[in-house]
Structure formats: C-alpha cells, structure tokens
Amino acid sequence: MIDYKSAGVDVTRGYKLVDLIKKSAADTYDENVLSGLGSFGGFYAVPKGLKEPVLVSGTDGVGTKLKYAMVLDKHDTIGTDCVAMCVNDIVCQGAKPLFFLDYVACGKLDPEKMSVVVKGVAKACKEVGCALIGGETAEMPGMYPEDEYDLAGFAVGIADKDRIINGSKVKKGDALVGLASSGVHSNGFSLVRKLLGEDRKELEKYDASLGMTVGEAVLTPTKLYVRSALAIADKHDVHGIAHITGGGFIENIPRILPEGLCAEVDLDSFPRLPIFDLLAAKSGLGDDKLYNTFNMGIGMVFAVSAEEAENVVKTAIAEGESAYIIGRVTEGSGVKLLREGK
Picture (spheres, rainbow, N blue to C red):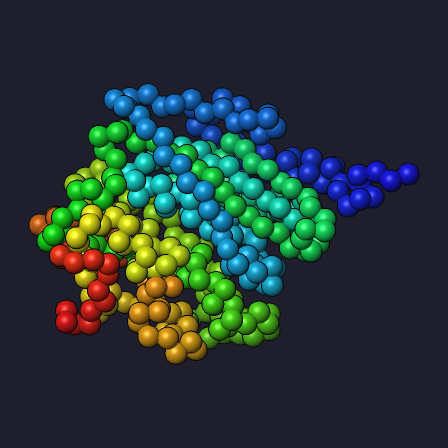
C-alpha cells in the first residue's frame, strides 16, 4: 500500500504544529478577531472610528538570511524578520497593521522547530499590535531538502484616507530624519553569505569588533518600527517615509520623492554599525555599492519640514529609537551621497 505518508507527507505533523502554536497566536488577538486558527479563513472586523478607512497590504519574506538560521540551528528570531519586512513596509504609508498571515514551506515538517519559528512570528505580531489570524504550512518533499524551509508573510493595515502618507507632500528643503537599524536586517544576504561564508565554526567565533559572534551579528532580527513610526506620524506632519530594504538608500529613498527632487544624504551624520565595516572591508566595495545594497545603519527615513526635524528626532528618541538628521531634499533626482556636507 502506498499512501500519503509513504510519499513523504505526514499530516499528523501539521496537526501537532497547530496545537503547539495556537496559544501563541491567540495571545496576539484583539476584539476584532472573530475566529481562531483552524478555519478556512481568518475573520477580522474593520475597526470603527475612521472617517474613510483604507486597507493597506504588504507581503515579503526574509530571503537567504534563512540559510544562517538553518546553519546555526537558531530559529527563534527569523519570525521577527518576516513580520518586520511586511509591517515596516505598510507603516510607511501611515497604516496601522491589523493582521498577519504566514507561510512556511519545508521538505519535512519538524513540528517543534516550526513552532519555534511561528512563535517568533507571534511574538513580533504582539509587539506591533498585529493579530496573527492564520497561515499555511506546506510539507513539500522533493521541492526542499528535509532540513530546510522557506518563510514568507502577508500583512494588512488600515489608515484614514486623508492621513495616508505617500510622498506627495515631500518638497525641496525638507529634512531627512533616519532611525537606526539593528543590523543587516533581511536584505543583501546573498552577498553577506558570499563574504562571511556558511561554516558554523567560523560563524560561532567571537569577533571583538562586533562585540559578539559573527553568527549573532548576522542573525540580529530586523527592527520593528511600527510603534515609533505611528507615534511620529501622529505628532508631526510627515511628508514621506522610506523603509530601507533591498536596494539600500539608492533605490528606496527615491520611492517617496516627487519628480524633480533629490535626496542628499550626509554619510557622516550617523554611525555606521560594525557589521557594515566588516562587510565593507571584506568586499572592497565603495559607498555607491554599499549604500545600494545594505541599510548601512539606517532602517527607516522620514521626510519632514526642516523646521520640524529636531522635534521628530526628539519624538523618535522618546520612543526608544536612535535618530539623526541625515540629509535634505533638493532639486535633482535620485540620491547623492555626501561626506562632511560636501
């Protein structure tokens, strides 16, 4: 007899995983969640109190950073990366995240390991006030090696139509305020892996310049900016917000600039994290390539009036962020990287 289990898929492992993560998911629920895990769809009531509510959605994964989670057998923070990559995007539009769904695909489902991953997702969702209302776990023998998996997510948020932030208000003379990143976040890891390798013994060596092991540095989870970004948007007139993800400064800041405007960034206005000094030294890349690949120490950029910039920095600091005025908006196009204001 040839059944589904003999073909490589044991559905009982999926049932066990759901049991292991149900409480973690339930801890993220608010009064708008109308069903728990296990239904064919997740129900979420649209919150009241908005004049003209608009739903804002985003989806993303964590790229090949997953390789390091698997090499180091450390899976408790990769879920934070997945949530952060989605919710940090939608908060750029001024949207408060409402709910999140995850997708895990693997060669052979290990319920205990995957429960650690999904509990990390739930923990991050709870931190940003976002309900984990569903997901999918796909056991796919033949598509993935038995000990490997992929992870992606999908988030939906909400904003009042007249409070949407889309960059249309950005103007010449605006200041650029940057919030510090926690590390490499979840972009550029194909290059990171080429530069630092995937040897577990080497990754577990302490590096004095980093103040931790190389493995700890590269697996530092992506910073969650939701609460601080919403606080800044609530207290100040924010013209645009850019999440510094794949493509670094060069690709992401222009996404909030109207035609005819340029972002001038003073690279000496904020500290460069040690992990980026290491990557720069190993790669030999110049600023043009580094700032087009990595966040280089700034994970989110706000465009605000020059008069408001110092107050935005103060609000960000009050929210627990390290924040800096990193540049200005001028006439032109794209991004200009400057040293000492030149």
